[in-house]
Image 1 (tube, each protein chain N blue to C red):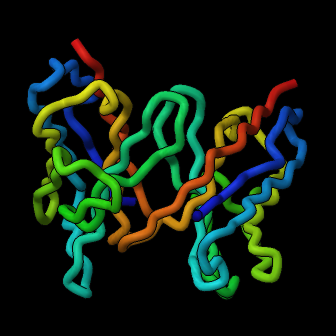
Image 2: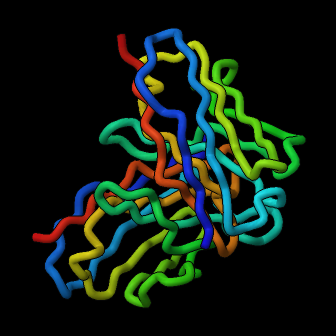
Length: 112
Length: 117
């Protein structure tokens, strides 16, 4: 299975400041069809996961513009341009290029 | 609006059985591949099982293969997970999701399964 490794696992941030989470995969996530099936999820405390970004850099409907995704191959990044209180939670990366789908360990974002 | 509502969780003894349901509404369930994903208490997300939109193909995580069975009834817009020979390590919140690769990714609120004597 493809191993997804996130860093850091814990991220204390100051309100209004930027934040960045990295995710690395154990093999390239470029599919034979040319797409890269790499996604980011947010899970707020006590809630279900919610997808923020699909296929590396596409924001899902309703996701604030302060969230952005980038990367290619095996290295990917989620950036929050200015952290707000509602961004507290755990963020997971996920790959759907190789079977079975696999998730990163999660990065816990908290306010300093 | 889109809804996925899981039910059927509860407390079960090791070796016991349980059937989870996921009722879908607000989208064309019969054209959607579906998955079960679980989350042990305080832990991350783990993919559990997949079923193609028409039920023609299924797959499972190695950790549950042979013990959990995914199925669906498109006439009832419902996804199922039959769980048997349950172990303590199956204790988790179970979510149903379409795990979309494109727009429109849907998740339910989850149902808690606790395996304990």
